[in-house]
Image 1 (cartoon, helix red, strand yellow):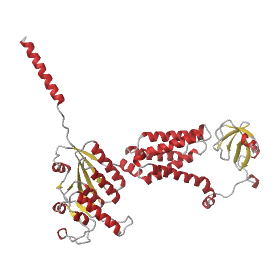
Image 2 (cartoon, rainbow, N blue to C red; image 1 turned 45 degrees about the vertical axis):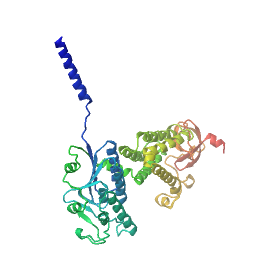
Image 3 (cartoon, rainbow, N blue to C red; image 1 turned 30 degrees about the vertical axis):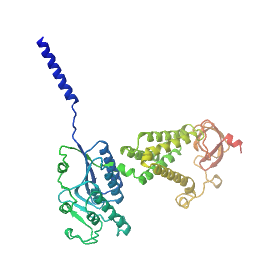
Image 4 (tube, rainbow, N blue to C red; image 1 turned 135 degrees about the vertical axis):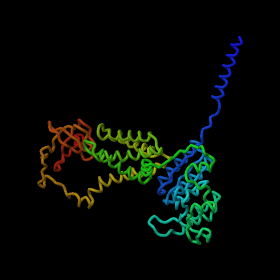
Length: 447
């Protein structure tokens, strides 16, 4: 009996230990994101940084290190990054790590962080803005830049006079070797002595030690070629241009007679490239792409397979337009502007090619003016004048060109713009060189 009690007590002890181990809380190591800000500061890089900051907040990161190494770039992109950094103050600690240099726009990104770390031999400052075409900055731009840097320094409890001097110094600073009106660039040692470097760090572990997170897991985030290309493509005007060219080529190919040629392939690839770029960056889902492809399918059915007097064309156009809107990110990405603008450009392109260009002086120079009429002595290699007034049956859709059978002879026939279904009686009422122009018997009876 005592033996059974001993076994029972041992089993209960083991069960209690197992439950204690199972229920004990697990403490995961903190994570620290390291986001590269290397090379020119541009809109795509700003989008990348904003997205990674949001991701760090969602995943509960303890800190974010922005590894800055840049000579500068676009001021607006730097401001966008600054706003994103400040907006995440409650989510995690931010550190601007000047790996080699943080100049011009890069200095604003660094200044926006709660802490600044600099590698030995790094430089920080020199932020006077200049026009894209060169030359001196205008007073308005200078005033804005000085205020932007000053207010950011105040938000981070640093000496605003020094940050303003990165743009243009308002006073003499003998300790830093500059006079009023000069532009300040600071070494690592100067930055530390004047409260603009909280830690001199040769590597990321040095920064983790400064943050009291020595055991943190580093999550590196680099802007690779695919993401760089995608960010460039989703820039609004690049998206508009690519969509306009690609869609115009696809629509033009739909208007051709029998096959899907090189223009349609190139157009489809260009449009697909825009969609893939948005999907890679997570700014759009598959719903928009599916709707767009469904719309294209309806349009192809109307033009190539089963004419419905415009019904499928209308449904396809609506599906394609709505799909395009969602494929570009919908309301969250302000997709209405690029979608509407690109479609408007396609309409302008098609109108120009179909109506304006054939009547323009350029066309008359590049092409051959006038028509080769049979009355003027022109005869095609296969003389079709004998078919004038002949009645045949369409073998394919005339959209407006197609094939019709005339007593066993297949001829390429075109209408004056209307679509004609297969197995429809047509009459040849005009011959223009090699062109055989027909119309339905119903249309002929109404004349």
